[in-house]
Image 1: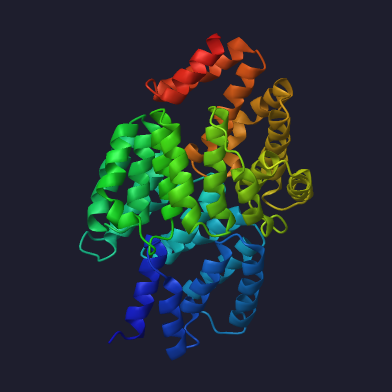
Image 2 (image 1 turned 30 degrees about the vertical axis):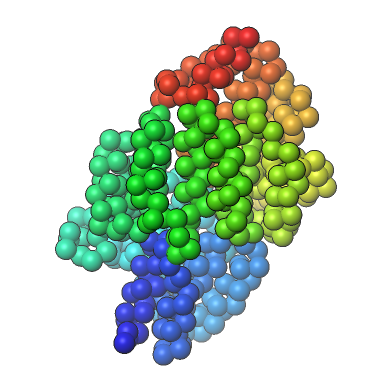
Length: 424
């Protein structure tokens, strides 16, 4: 029979592997010891990292209770980071965690939270430095070494060090075969280096490890597999993944809803019509439209509303973005300089005013990271910009943008199709 420490360790592993349900083990811990502060704080982190408005309210109630307790150094660091994260002060929250992780490089909860918050800001690459600071304090015999190594691999991938990222992430995948991060990192490397056939082999060889109910991010992994089919020109197979693999396990949570939205958008601009799928998808977004607090999520919500031809839903998202752009919050520049112009340009694009769409999208290219997400996820904006240039008849701009894409993916079906369309 497991004791409290075993249940807490299981909860931490489930949280950092993104495999299993940490909440079940946390409840067992808190039944035995309701005052175990780090278990309570991890429960709050699970709510905050969902980026869901109703979850934020629950997290605030938890923090109000914790504030009355005597806190250790570790407890206090997580408490302060949570306070900041709840108020969308993501950079400051990460700074608190970074400072603490230099003192306690073995705190996997802190590493995972900092990684996730950096990802929401388009700063996944910072994990390479964070993990590099910590790993020398770890031993390869430490039971969770593979988790820490997987964080490092994903950071290296987003840093553009693809060769090392692949080697390290494959090693981490051997150590933690059910881990989301090492499988995910290798998928990203194969996507970024234009190796879709290898990507499909990687996915197929490990499907039993990632395609199960315990994998909390399997929707995103299916999305990655669909991208490999897109790069090979097999649009119908990508659409089949949407219908048969993604939608059946979809939860109405914004971080998951971005996946089908991004996939349908890519398919449509590549020439495959989604039909009623947009109208069926938008209701899943409806509960998220008020109270969202992520530029990345809100951009995708606006895209879904536009494709579903729901002007009211689109305007609701845009108004929310504008209101946040005019605050003194740390995320305001991202809303003002990136999210708002992208969402307004996407409206022009959907309404076939391609020249204005292009003029709206070009200025944000240098700051695109601020929308959040990974490089592969943000490619949807760069792809749309290139298509807008083609459809606007701006041949030289289109070819310039395509030339940049060809640098990393010379054999891509998508890029070949863009070249063909630009030439025409």
